[in-house]
Length: 225
Length: 183
Image 1 (cartoon, chains in turn red, purple):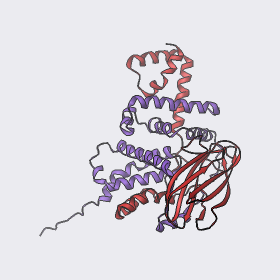
Image 2 (image 1 turned 180 degrees about the horizontal axis):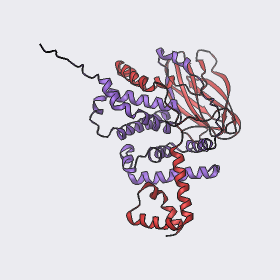
Image 3 (image 1 turned 135 degrees about the vertical axis):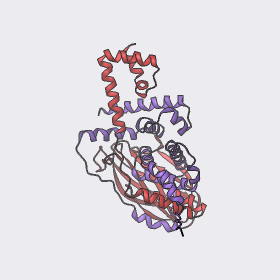
Image 4 (image 1 turned 30 degrees about the vertical axis):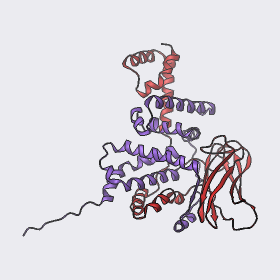
């Protein structure tokens, strides 16, 4: 077998899925070929690095809290439980975010714009922006649209500059959670539009995308758990 | 007369904790790889535990709990992505509004000048750029050590499809790393 063919089987070798015969051929070649030995050790190191990617440790007493929450949750009625399950923990999260509460549709103008503080973010960094809409009454089938600048994308919607949903907003506070990834060094503005009954509420959030590490944020650098 | 000692029956919550507790860190670690942040990972695990608690009797009959739990976590993660794609808005329950005040910006973390850490940080950036599909397969197979037949059960996807997905995910990651030039 040639070195190229051998390298083609590298994943199978490391995954332990080679047949007995293939394993013998592979090992024999490796025993005599320095180049393939280097390729193997490079790949092993790469896989080890992947395993070693740090995981931010669990919050203190998470396990106590989570079991207690589960027991308490059961006492609530089903409707409420399904409602809280998707929300309760998310809101308690302490994450990088910008919390903005706006009174919604309480004013007469058909279009109103709120300009929010500028967000600094590094290229390839993911930050979650959470916006809170305070609705004066329930809004059935409101249209929620996010207009993105070229410098950021919404995680899960690669390449899309406009993302829209139909959503029901309840009376009171409604949380819009936006995981955003910075793509290129550039300033720009994201707009969140909520349209209902001929009126539009706009929230404009400016982005300053900087070189990696410039925004003062980096992935947590704590030991693995 | 003999004293009769009656031991109270073990509470069902205790039993549940005994079963699931030893797997909690593992679930969190997998969730962290899926989600990329502690908060989202804890949310995911908490949602899972709440769901499982409601059907805790069934858990006692599961033979291999860890892969079973990993499957439940994976399904919930996929459901959450779909739900988010349908609508990203959730209403804040009136009696939970006080929690909004607890939201804080915990983004700033002091830099640690260490070559390996920097390398891993770079690798993490590349890993974060992968699609959900690719991140999921690499997390479960290459990082958490599940083999393909186990993943077939966990993800409900045939081994052949998983194998080619794994291959593509590695290729994509290697490609990103190579372009980045860190390794």
